[in-house]
Amino acid sequence: MCKVVKVNLSSYYHWIKSGCVIKKVDKKLNKLIEIIFVQGRHNYGTRRIQSKLLELYGLIISRQRISNIMKDLKLKVKMKRRYKNTTDSNHNLPIAPNILNRDFYASNPNEKYVGDITYIPTGEGWLYLATVIDLYSRKVVGWSMDDTMKVSLVNNALNMAMLHRKPSSGPLWHTDRGSQYASYSHKDLLEKYNIVQSMSRKGNCWDNSVAESFFKSLKQELVYNTYFYTKKQAKKEIFEYIEFYYNRVRSHSYLGNLSPVKFEEKQEKEKVLQSEMVA
Image 1 (spheres, rainbow, N blue to C red):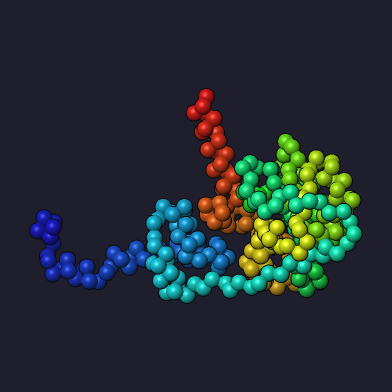
Image 2 (cartoon, rainbow, N blue to C red):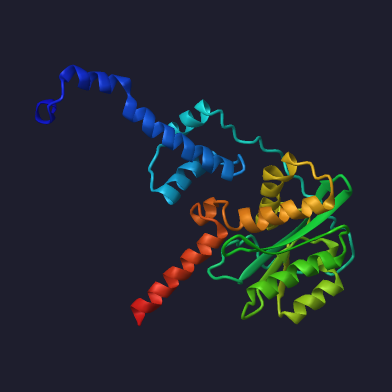
């Protein structure tokens, strides 16, 4: 090869030993990995970074190489803390049966929703967050924040979901046995939208694990690493986390490492292609 291109043999070996090409490629790869890590809020390990490199840049890189680069760049994944459920189910209100029964798979949008409530600490006291998640894509389709944990908190979240998604028929709605979900006001709202209610068994957090998993991610990726001086600040950052990061950017292993929005878009495109092929 050196004879063909008329390159001195000793110069060629010097070029190989210097590793100029390798260093140049590594520098670009290092930058891409650092960008993905920062965009992932310092929560992405080698598996998710590997998936993002393939999805965004078409690069196939081994996890071992990614791990070595992360060590060189001192990129450390945030330590996870144990999440504790704090819902109060001590009441005498009527309880719905556990229809969902841990079947967290949904073949279509708006088929099954799950919801829950969590507490957010701020410098001005507790802020309460209620969410509605579509099991089809794990997208947070409804949410509400308030200073108190009244029934209006969960009603507003569910109203948002129904107005945003506009389902053709009432979905199955699964929650824990919290008094807000068992209240007569909430049951009136379910009747309005023709929603079938389902509730977890008493003291069984696994019956609503998807809803609790979202709160665990929220706490570990945002709340535990941020001091909210005011409730206004907390509302703003939680809104950004849900709408701009969790729904649109954050990859989910359950969805083939796609975000909920990208998963829905992909599924919709596939359905359109299938219908065109049939036609």
